[in-house]
Amino acid sequence: DAHSTIVHNKTRNIIGVVPGSTHPDDYILYTAHWDHLGIKPDVEGPDKIYNGAIDNGMGDSSILEIGEAFAHDAVKPKRSIAINCWTLEEQGLLGSEYFAKHPVWPLSHIVGGINLDANLAEGHAHDLVLVGNGASEMEDLLAVALKPQNRVISPDPESEKGHFYRSDHISLAKVGVPMLDPDNGFDLVQGGTAAGQAVRDDYREHHYHQPSDEYDPKWDLSGPIDDLNALYALGETLGNSDQWPNWYPGNEFRAIRDKSRGTK
Image 1: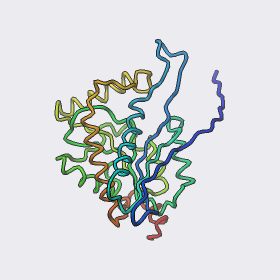
Image 2: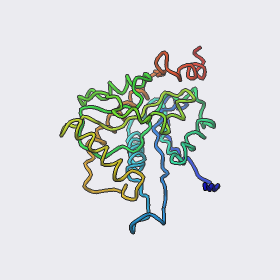
Image 3: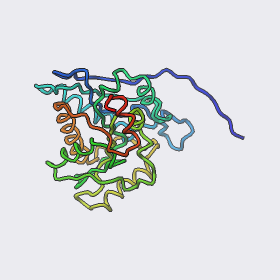
Image 4: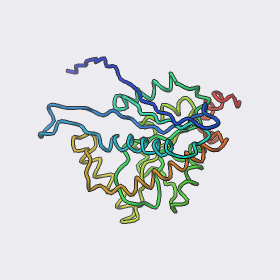
């Protein structure tokens, strides 16, 4: 027999903004989800807490670091930088979906965004995996931001898992906002793609949605730091430009963006 229950909760998306210096009504988003699975009393072992350090403490801490960097810049970008922490991602992307349906700023004034979800602790890499690559002009900006690190964009090595449709960026994409979903390096400087796959396999098999997803002081964070430097640079470039990235011609979300921007 199957038994279902309904639980009503009150929860919040959390948003912080670094106002732009000349175009404060135009926003660049850095997003991550702050929720996880809480406590499961019947799980084996003494630790019942689903800490969610990777999924998605890593994402939240990353966008907060980027937001702090922009907040402390002596010269602020021309456009505003918004740090958005979504709720209820684990329950079906509900927090980001609510924002997309009830945006606090007009969708026509959201320039684009970057979503970080469950980024792994690993060493330096030759590349940066972009889930759903080949979708929008945001990717062109990312490629430029990676060049000073001698890195390139790689496609998702596990695209068959449908990751592009399983995280919060898809809620914004559905209403036309060009979004990126970066997912760590795969071709690691130490060990190549075999090492990159090993990091992914270890997390998925032993820590994903388990109490063991907790911070380890032995983590090598050099790879995530490289990623954040590139993603900050992307936001700085876009924030000081007059560019309005769009989805590439033929993409399923381009017509929605064109309509919201009034370009067609």
